[in-house]
Image 1 (cartoon, rainbow, N blue to C red):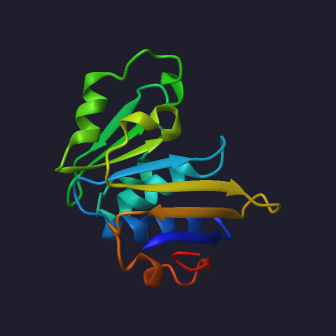
Image 2: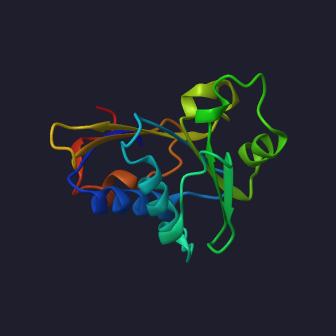
Length: 165
């Protein structure tokens, strides 16, 4: 698929874009998220959980203080990880490394650029930028290995720059 540039006009749209991505993600996928505080990363993860048919997605919260939360109610386990507090850590906790390496779960990491050296070869990278309108987000999805080949078609309503642009 390459790279998609999207515009999300609202919080609901950000969740919907995450849901569409979540529907196409196979088990074993690592999803790296980055963007400033308040850019919509956790809301996007709620959408991914919804796309995985995780029934408790509405109650999903940021794992900033717990570092990792796992959800088991969908079509595969969802590990939601936050590297923010691990910025000064000399190493990652073993359970987080296990989640990243799992081929039976989807691991979504907020502030993923902090530990880029642990990203697996197959990943999806999602960046968030706040546009002038505080509700509008520019979302860039990079899928260099083509994990979700039909994603551009599914997200056509939000695309501002097509794949490979």
